Image (cartoon, rainbow, N blue to C red):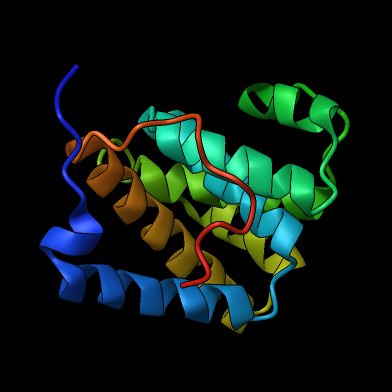
Length: 154
């Protein structure tokens, strides 16, 4: 296995900039449990083991059920997610996979049924942030498995 590069120490200014975005997301008013579902799903799409570990544990700590976490990769077929959650997960997938296809107007309209404009922007920032964390964690070979809920106060 490749060595881990501790990006928090090697480039603390970059880490602090990303952490500032994360602090905004945590205080924006969108339900914490929903944000953890979104972060977990984006991390699944990107294959980031560290972030999947972290956000599934944080989701559990926020009251998420094991069953819903197990079904997250197949959320479209699972009846246990609300329409608001489905809209957020669809938006998360669309922005994460934007290189393949841009979100269409139907997706935007569905999102607007459940989120106001500020929430759409904040949800988009959350998706931007977790995609960034995924890429840095994968690029620096951050080891998965040892994270404890609430470990990073930022």
